[in-house]
Amino acid sequence: RKMTKANFVSGIGGANTPAFLAYVNSNTQSIANNSTVKITYYNTEEFDTDNAFASGQFTCPSGKGGKYFLNGSISTSLGADAGVFDKQFNLQIKVGTTTVASNTIIRPPYAQFGITAIADVSENQTISMHMYQDSGSAVTIDGNRRAFFGGFKLI
Image (cartoon, rainbow, N blue to C red; front, top):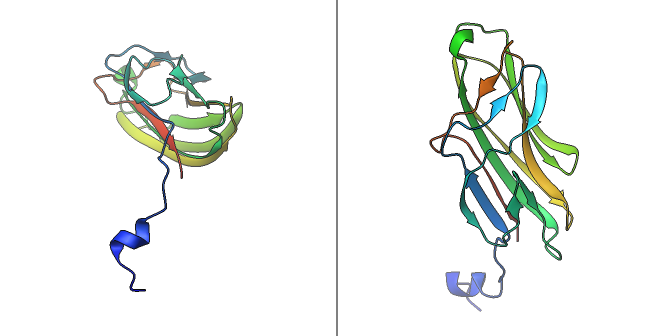
């Protein structure tokens, strides 16, 4: 039987759900100096196929455990600390209390950086994004859709 595109993909089935994507529309969360903070500022859900995203985290629905692709990004400026280059941001994705991905950058005057992970998630586990910063003062996360957090189940 000759393999064609049509019969090659037939029978795969399934969808990459649950899936969620939340954005920030305004500068609404401040990250204190020398602390790791769960990002909870999301005020616009682009989509949430299973209504499982709330309070800054996704809770894996019953029967929907498996491997998930997770992606997030943060944007912020240093303000008074601009020009100080020995400080850092650390962005983390956690499944429950376990960090499954971490990305650290030395802070330029303006920072836009992201994080990606593929993680095993069990039903009822939470997925969240956290940030650490050590600028010497609090930093506000930029809004206007410059910060987001999302993910979907891999089929």
